[in-house]
Length: 306
Figure 1 (cartoon, rainbow, N blue to C red):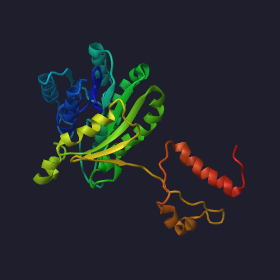
Figure 2: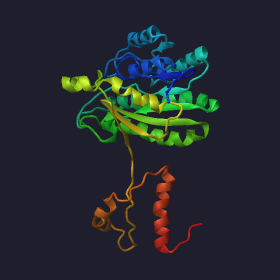
Figure 3: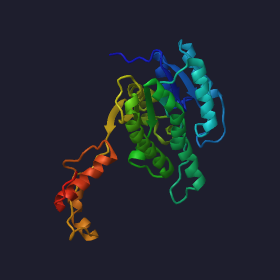
């Protein structure tokens, strides 16, 4: 099976360099028309330039593809609205959204400022939300959509000095979970990519030998699958150096404490059993998880649930 995107229109944010550029090039190489979005700012979000996005567009056109550049700040509703309007004007549809734009303002939590926090969350989490809000009604009407959020090991597992970044990157997973449920009836599939790549955001932190292994091109194949016609939905795909794995949020079976034991001391005494991963489950909705507990409580109390 060959994955193609002929007649599809894709928006890729933060596509002026690094992962976003590779995603845009990969989509275009397989037939997609691409809106190349990049604000063109510095790593901390300051400044702006149209040059990075225009360079990506030139690369796509040189390979025979169709693309245009747009410098929208993903955290600005009006600018994102203009981006979408131009995509609809030129191509009449939007099938794929890759929320890739991001900035960094790393500091230990004891030194971070609220401005640092808000700037990072605004781009990564609020920006992904604004872009998704823009395309959502069009995808619903078309009965087709493929959306990818970009997370990180910092969000899933944590990294020192990245509380703002990590919180935003876990936030997009929560957003994915809900949109997966709400979009299912309209064939909108929503996934999350958790990449590790040597880009301008990370290469200064990595030794040269690792930089050579962690090219952005080794991640993009995973992205292309997540936005394909036969893509899964609600998947968290980790991708680094040509390696791919799926991260799963599981919940242990847990224990049911009786009335006499439902105390802090009871929880402490049962901690090993609470933490036992045997029989851990992957829940599809929050309601399923609640029913597990309520069902056990009802059974213990001899109450028949209707």
